[in-house]
Amino acid sequence: MKSAHIIIGQSDLAAMELGADVLRNDGFNVHLVTTGERILEHLKQPVLPDLVVVDNSLKSPTALELCRMVKSNPLLRSIPVVMLVPADSAPDNQAALEAGCDDLLVQPVNPHVLSARIQSLLRIKFLVEDLDDTESVLYTLTRIIEAKDSYTMGHADRVARYAIELGKALGVSGDDIESLRKGGMLHDIGKIAIPDPILTKPGKYTPEEFDIMKQHPGLGCEICKKLRSVRDALPLIKHHHEKLDGSGYPDGLAGGQIPTLVRIITIVDIYDALRSRRSYKEAFSLDTSFEVLWEEAKKGWWDKTVLSAWEKFVRQTENGSSSRGGGL
Ligand SMILES: [Fe+2]
Image (tube, rainbow, N blue to C red; front, side):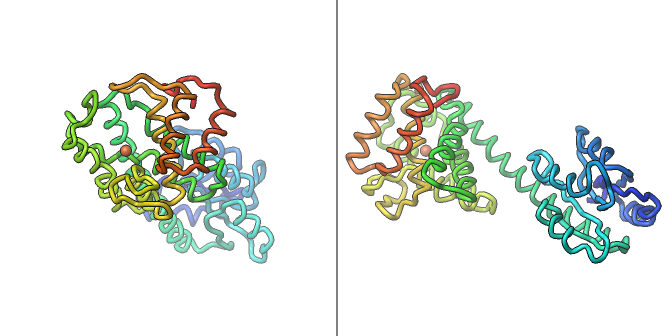
């Protein structure tokens, strides 16, 4: 926190000197600039600023334009933007908030208030980054599991991508799309706790081995349940091997007990497994894969509406190339 880099854009440099001194005394690295262009230059550097303060007198780009640029760029949007506004600027304030501005301070700004606001915004930013780091560790674990078995390489990424496509085709939106992405990436993370000889065994499992393998959804849920940012994906991790007729695992959920998002993950997980080469089988063709899925749907395992939407999407998008290494 103390060594955080703050860019302050203020056309009247003298007006910010006192504020900059207070911030420096509080331990921040402060860079004062007088134009919007100079702020843009800082935002193109390999080491990005931790927070940007913009005065609304800035021109080309204006403070509002800068704010929109930062908040619409996935690489920059986590940088808090504080806008300094004159008193009685209510319409501009509304536009600033709509542009994604994180805080508005009316000028003249008390430097100690500015410092306190900056510290508050940075605490949130660094907490979110910690969460992102933790998620990244989980995704790395997923890739470690896949690396143990070359046949499953890229499976989690594909399941996440397919789940999002299928979700959108079914009208899923907003936070649920994010849950599909996280659930797709992490659905098999519990395999990290499955012994390697079972995890990488070519051919079919013995009943005893299969009982151990069946623990991976529950183990995955245990690994992820303390992490608030993936909380909404927990049902997808725990239940991606359930079947509508109740014959799946780990809980034998049936029918309406299985949420739509879980049904989506289940279909695309199996689809990818069918379309991929595994130690015990070659990659199935598109037609054969859907034949298998429809047979199983008729047995009462899968949601026919979800499967139908996936087949429609896949056939419209692809002409049947193998899914290993990309595509559908
Ligand atoms: Fe699984």
